[in-house]
Image 1 (tube, rainbow, N blue to C red):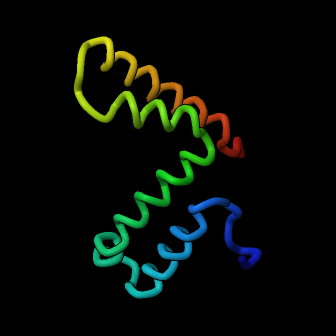
Image 2: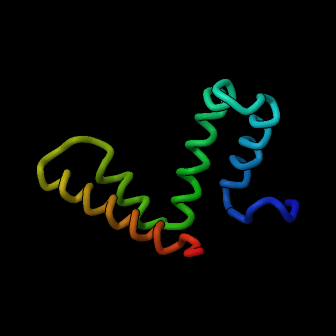
Image 3: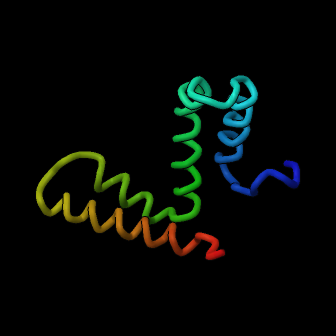
Length: 93
């Protein structure tokens, strides 16, 4: 990995490499957005799971389907916990 690439660990490195390859194949713009959207989403989900594994897992489990009012409330709480976790890892500058 070059000094310009982030250290993201795990399976995310494979997705990061794939996304870079996709970006090299298409010029910036709508065509690239469409072509690389799936890899971009997978990389984002992977990185969120690495940074906040418990919260990410809770959202995936509780928000995967509709369900009861209780499950929807638990989903909202899990989403809030994930947001708080991600915010705690953001650079304040």
